[in-house]
Amino acid sequence: MSGDGANATDTTTIYDYSQYYEFDNDFIPCNSVDVRNFGKVFLPTLYSLVFILGFVGNGLVVCVLVKHRNQTNLTDICLFNLALSDLLFVVALPFYSHFSAVSDWTFGEFMCRFFSSSHNTGFFSNIFFMVVMTLDRYVVIMHTHSVARYRTLRAGITMSAFVWMLSLGISVPAFIFTKVINGSHGLGCEFIPENDGWRLYNLITINVLGLMIPLLVMVVSYSRIIPTLVNMRSTKKHRVVKLIISLVVVFFLFWAPYNISLFLLFLKSEGMLQGDACKLENNLRLSLTVTEALAYTHCCLNPIIYAFLGQKFMKRTMQMLRKWVQGIQPTGDFSSSSVKKTSVIS
Image (cartoon, rainbow, N blue to C red; front, side, top):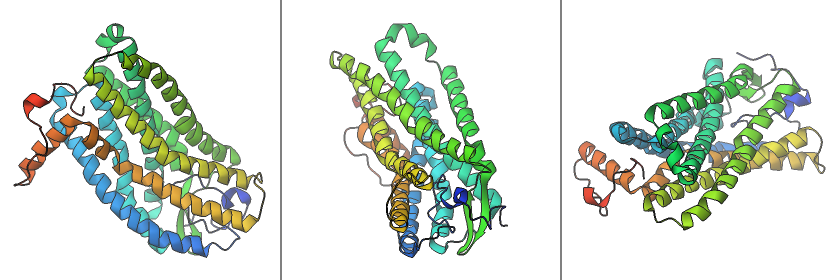
């Protein structure tokens, strides 16, 4: 099952770190045993924990939103899709945990391509839905009366379909160019583009579409929203904005270090970073391994944010859990009179 690049030794293959799990590149001339051994112990443990927490947490979010879909608004539609995006990550983690432990991809080329593209799709859809929520809050607060009639369920579904199609389109190269290759430590699953253009495309989409442009949109939007909110007395609007800002801040804190590591590795492959080649290579590989793991943990944090900031979400979750597991009692004041009839989450 080895790909066309199984015997390649050129720099294009050597320093390609465009996929999320490529801590096990077999074509590096430097000795990276310490980094490899660290990954074998650290990553399987972390991935297993993140899989459990992420699957349970995001599964609860999906169940709550589906159960109360008759109360859904545009914000809840975005949060539902955020949960689906996170589930795309956690489903693959048991496979990556096994790969991290044995340094051998045993699940075939289709699964290799599928998980690679699903990671890209989940990443871009996650950030795009956060941008949509930010823009939605902006028009609701700054242009309340003129946009109210456009915030319909149909508009939300149409917008969701567009975001998913866009995310899938951006991720197509990941499916096409990811291959199973035969290395010195066993089979690996790696992104091997046919030329440097696709490698540069991958770097640009992740850092520009996935970080710089969304961050710019959010900074500009919230710089206008927050001063306006200071003069408002609407608790509902304050609560929703607080929730969205928390989601955005956590996303960038967990993903930005990984994006920076990818960019530094690109600079290293182009010879733009000077210093001890092997020491720099191993430090960057270690940085990629750690920041990659940090980015993965993000997929189990959104439900925790909902639990702390979403009073109604906690109420709905406890009601559902009481039906599933006898003896669970609600915590805090979650009576019907204590929660306003707004969105399911907030």
